[in-house]
Each structure stands twice: as structure tokens, then as C-alpha cells.
Length: 131
Image (cartoon, rainbow, N blue to C red):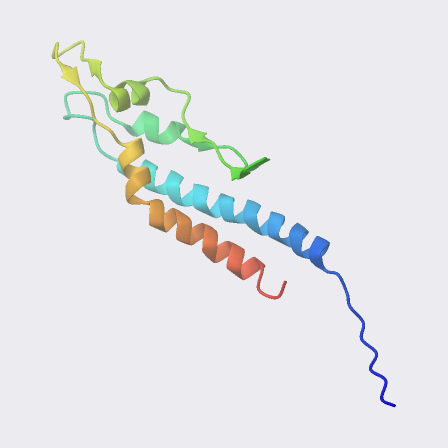
């Protein structure tokens, strides 16, 4: 008679903890990509040199730490200034007396969606290497 002894080790809790950490760090990386690119997009003026520069907005862009929610991780990126909201949504310009709009935040997010996703995936894959 041949006897085979097998030991099964349940590592699901350790893998879950590692995945939570990897996801948080992945969200950090993804948030950094978006912050970098939206700041880069604010390196110009909204319409022309005659109007306010976007430098103040660029300097005010902040992000919070990733938060774990029921559906997964999230991160808030934005500014407390009202000026970018007016340009993003559109407004009647006080000087030109015309409706003006220059979208920066949403088009940047759309254009960088793949880079943001890749940054997240790269960090998670590296962290989960031998889980």
C-alpha cells in the first residue's frame, strides 16, 4: 500500500490582503497619471493671453488618498476653485459678453483612460506577482 500525505494551506486571506494593498497602490498610480496629465493640460490659457492664465488652477489641483468603497477603490481628484468649473460647464464671459466654454478635465480623462488603466494594472500585477 502506498500512502500519500498532502497538506492543503488556505492562503485566500493573505491573497485578499495583498490584493487590497495592491489595489490601493494601483489607485495611487492611476490618480498620479490623471493629476499629471490634467496639470499638463492647464499649462495654457483658457482662451487667449488676454484672460486669466490657468496657472492658479494648475497649482490648486489635488487628490485625496484612495478610499475603499463597496464597489471597490475610488479616488477624488479636483480643485476647490470655481473658475475651472465655469470653463468646463460653460459661462457667459464678463468681458466678451459671450457664452464661452473650454473643457479640460473630461477630455483629458477620456484621452488618458488607457494610460490610467495601464498604470493601475501594472502596479497590481507587480504586487500580486507570487500571490
